[in-house]
Image (cartoon, rainbow, N blue to C red; front, side):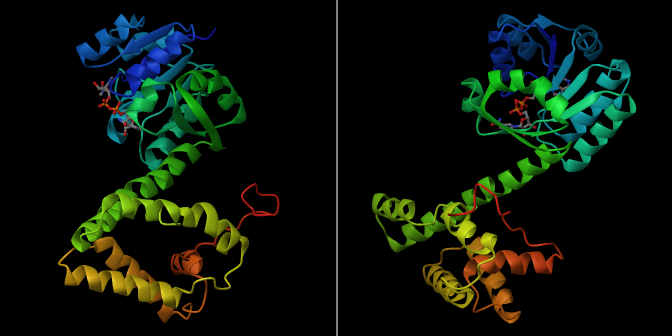
Length: 307
Ligand code: NAD
């Protein structure tokens, strides 16, 4: 059995480390905060007094740290950094949420030392980490992925190999953009409902029964724009009209809806570029066109392609 090093034993790292130990692995743990280190030792971790000691005693080195700067420092920064001591055959797996530039930089530093690197940021909440039910977005080689898979299975229930090094971190940003933006969208929608004096349960009954809870991406888009079908459906012109009704009604109620206003302008821009008659899922093509990107399409064999 490989020996595991775990650096960063905070709200996420501590339960993740504990779940690896439940699988029978020898775990060498380190954190700059004594109380966090002690909590990991209480769960069966073997205490290390430095990064150097973790590297010396482990085959796979996991980092679960707050941010990009700290990850760079711990992996490749100063004298007591993982890569100051790591040797060929060891593997570094960073599970923190960091910038793509940080992941690419660290992957490059690891490659210079012939050390495999995996980025595997975590989806879902701390409560899922407690229960070993996290979701992982993994970037790296197939060999590296297979090597860390037994550990990921102990820490989580849904594991996706998203592509080569950096694909995990990049997928995480796409995911978190939607997951977090929806907090603002939800806030605006339920504020408007409150301004209208609507009953919350009745409102939720309706929202959960339509594409409002991002059924667009899950149901409508695979059949429409992602399958190259932009025939309306529901046109961008009509969607713009409805967003105008929303923004104007909210203004009448003195309810501020910044995302709704921004979305209305985006739909208006699409109209100005001649897309008003297309299905409203074609907003994807408008946005990709503005950014000089290829518009994504499902491949013929994609599991997301409707029958
Ligand atoms: P946290 O602040 O609770 O834990 C980070 C740990 O790293 C702390 O114990 C801290 O003492 C330790 N640390 C800081 N600098 C260190 C160093 N130089 N050497 C060793 N240890 C050091 O944060 P968290 O909530 O566990 O999040 C960790 C990462 O996971 C973040 O990147 C976060 O964005 C991401 N994430 C968090 C959640 C969540 O719900 N909390 C969910 C998904 C992803």
